[in-house]
Length: 253
Picture 1 (cartoon, one colour):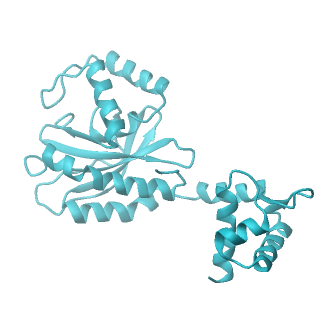
Picture 2: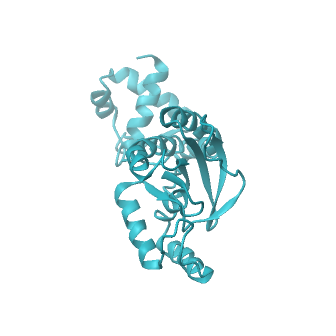
Picture 3: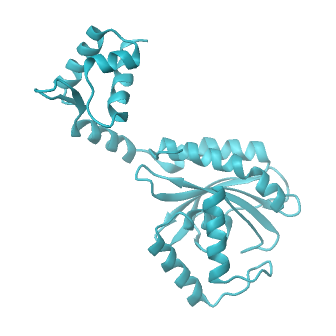
């Protein structure tokens, strides 16, 4: 383990600790010599990144370290971070992958990697859509705060919509049941809700504040990409959405 790796390991140990840590404690956890640990902690303290309590002689992270972390998070671009995973999903599934972000109580497509099939789903980048229909919208809606979900459902009620593009009846009760299922399985599937003949599967993306900020999707034309196929790809899309969330700073179980 080189010096840089030792610094990272020590900072990670302090960050994951419920309180402060002593030199001996860190030494045991990481298998490092006490002198090495003390030397690194002293250097970090001189930079203002850790603080040593005078009485206990134990170390903890300072606000300076938190500012560095927050500055790093603020520089992360969800579109840039997601692109490799969009490419991967398109390559694995053969269907169109897309990234939506939350914009108030709507969502908007900002990235897409189209399928190579001649007949394929084309995602309208920059278009805003309601949260209450489509797998991408419900993947976000299911994890919004309860008062926000209520506001979106009131928008749905005011719209007067009772039947979706594929002929499915939709009510507030049916939407709440679907949102509960999304929270339970971690991803959302939908078929023919806005455009008849199109099926999709989506999973939510979270930021460092554990707030849902978007969704990752795969969609394609039926019957090539039907509900069974969408459900099969659900865990795959969820896994890649979790990886994006983790890069953005979310704590993912």
